[in-house]
Length: 140
Image (cartoon, rainbow, N blue to C red; front, top):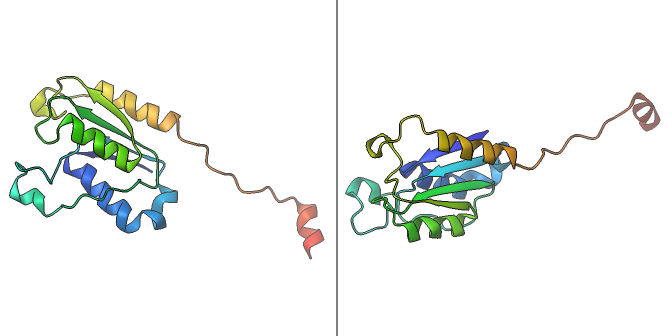
């Protein structure tokens, strides 16, 4: 399974991973985290403040975090800090806002490229050892 999150969804993924990640991480191949919301910033809407504090620990799965140099929901420095704390690869896009429809992103082809990168670079899933009929008969 691949997780794709935007804004508050990125923080929600961090909370989920903090609470349940060790139990479920084996099911998550990776996460694409786009334009995270800084719920701890002074200007955060009151409705978002309940998501603070943001867990600051490595996610138990591979992730890519995409930030913007002019996102009002999280500064570039804060987005990079999230990426460092969560162990995410970090990409900073120049002047693209909150990376949503309001900032001119509709069918976000670049986002699809990040998703392909995430899925192409994921480590191969371990395969179960092959059991031959002779191995089974020898065991009994």
